[in-house]
Image (cartoon, rainbow, N blue to C red; front, side):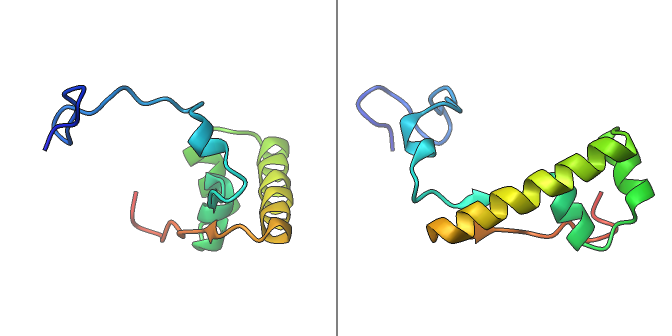
Length: 89
């Protein structure tokens, strides 16, 4: 089914990561990849290799993830935290 502008699931409109709807204070928070891998049981060495970051960068990513998740929780926003289980990549 196409909309008025001719867009459909087979012909989607261009993705706009800055669309105002995505900035809603009610939008779910998505935990960053480093935290999702960590919670999925991946070793730090594997995460470093997979994300191609240094140890200090990984620590910063995990701290940022915890800070952002805490802020989302204080705001009452839902948190999407799908783990990346070992063996899925």
